Length: 158
Image 1 (cartoon, one colour):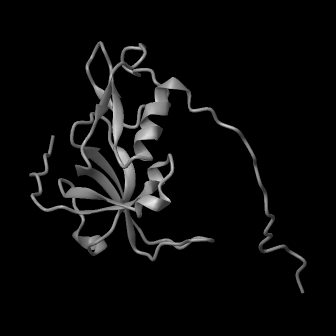
Image 2 (image 1 turned 60 degrees about the vertical axis):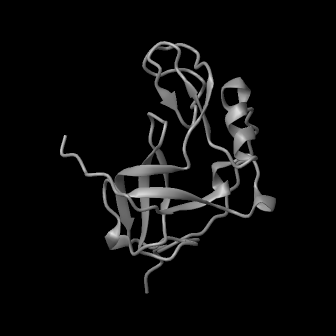
Image 3 (image 1 turned 60 degrees about the horizontal axis):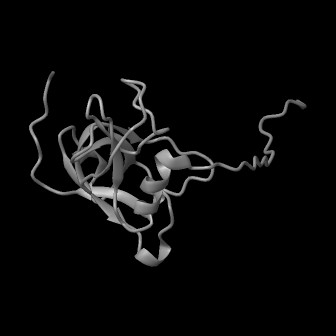
């Protein structure tokens, strides 16, 4: 008989306080209103959604104007997840994807549902599916997933 430990579950909790700051506050407020708002760089004019840190990573300047981006976008990359894990709430297989929202220059990561996982493809047009408004807060989790929107773009080999 072996005394080797095969698995040990140890609940661990980390508590922290995060302050959104001016770069993210408008973005988070918009989420609580059912809108998607990023920020534009005044130098390169790229639109960042979400506006990570409030600084343009390309030019090193504070991001400027708020820009409302679309609730539809195009899948640029994706992964079909088939590996179960402890605490999993989504039935496998499921799709995690990078989505370039209309009007944004930075892809956002989110779930794709509403079609079989093997039908998801690069260039697929998707649209945001929101929780009921009474459940909204200041988080991107207000969007439960993205679903097919039709009108696929041709995938580029570039």
